[in-house]
Length: 97
Image (cartoon, rainbow, N blue to C red; front, top):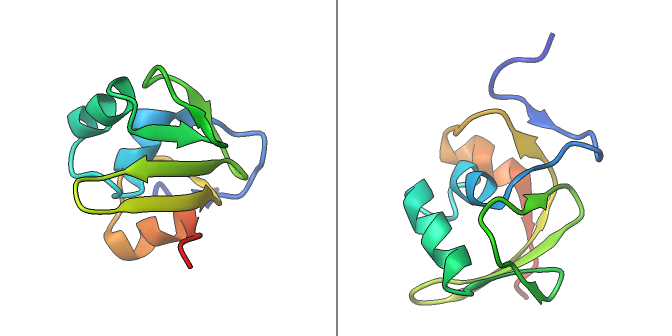
């Protein structure tokens, strides 16, 4: 039995983009995640994400234009709920060099 905070490593699991951004703590609110996607500030594997409900999963690379920086991350896992930031960092690999 998995704990509710467990990060899923199963590659076939997918999640809504807006939820994943919020669960991974890359944005403060889910509403902010929706806005970023709808305004064209998020790309999945170099292609513009057009809807917040777009499914993402392990292996996808996200480019997120935030207010003061651009984040490039590879999704490593899916969470079942929003966790503390230490656990949320396990959801992605930072590709910024």
